[in-house]
Image 1 (tube, rainbow over the protein chains, first blue to last red):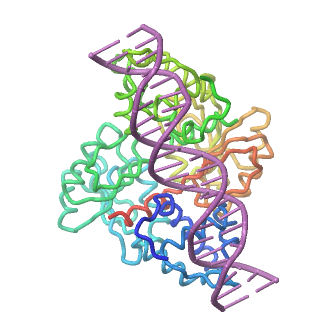
Image 2 (cartoon, rainbow over the protein chains, first blue to last red; image 1 turned 120 degrees about the vertical axis):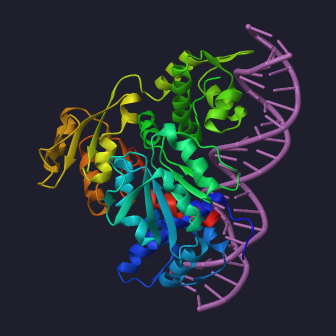
Image 3 (tube, rainbow over the protein chains, first blue to last red; image 1 turned 90 degrees about the horizontal axis):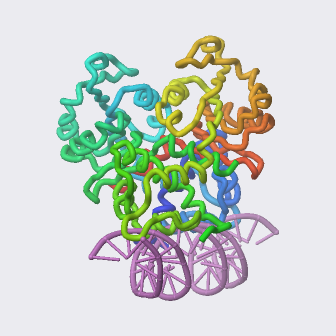
Length: 204
Length: 204
DNA sequence: TCCTGTGAACTTGTTCACAGCT
DNA sequence: AGCTGTGAACAAGTTCACAGGA
């Protein structure tokens, strides 16, 4: 049953399903019941069936889900079937790590440009991509790029995102340790690695 | 009113409150009502008051929360007042970025050791910390270290965490792109940066 | 028999509304 | 007047229980 209201949490889990599906696909497995997928993503099988049911009914009773079909479907839902052009701002250690991440390419992301405002970095390359001056950020408007990764120091993150949004960016992965104010039509996902570590001692 | 059952989501938010409090403290602000803290963390003020109320009543009616007291209290709750010894496994680009992160130190984390299994890295330094062979992981038992950050390739992440847990680790920040099987008394927080990016095109 | 898809029950988390302290 | 702390109402998310197709 196709829904109009898909829960946020469902969208958050789809990438994990996709990762697991690519993994089993590599091993040549053709179909997979929900309880096996559940093992890979450490979730309740009912949860998975409910999540998928928001987009249609593509499981086969008795055998589970066809791996290839489901992979294709999730890629479609997440709009991963056409390549997603992405820019990276900030070529410090974290930015450099990100730029050379094998994961992004695999899921259809194409880091088309890297920006930094340090003279010592501008002109150098990470992989095949030249680091450009942050002054050139308006490039992204011409190239109709919608996604950006911010790996700058927090002090400049807000001004960076403001310029990005002015130039048409609508989705941001923010790795700097601060919140960003953006118009509500822009989706920001903030990950501060320190915050994630800080939680752990509480449980020990 | 002191609770025995603190919601998981409350714990997730405490680090963010702490970050905001350190920020306003630097600016010399002494007390802060919930609606101002709410701006910094982009949350509803009621949410903040409810979260804090699980641990006691330390707000002042009319003026809000004393910044210093609240900072101290949250640090206590999160067990951040004694230094938290932490090890890092994996000295690739991401691991290196992590090791030189200024954020961790600020919150009382002390990266006491870095491990990697590549001969070309062993013996080198990141900051002041020498990279040791992964064979030396049992060190952590003698040093009673409870926390670990895993930044290895996913292929070796599971064996790494197994060794870590055998040697007394009870909290893990897992930055490799895979799930880890651990005994239930061990808390694992997995962050896969690719997964976070993948969600964004859906909303654009 | 095995497994999906789904309403209903339940659990968890959030927001409202307001009493009461300073 | 301004703000906290909190029960009650509400919303979101998860799990159960089971009908029904392959």
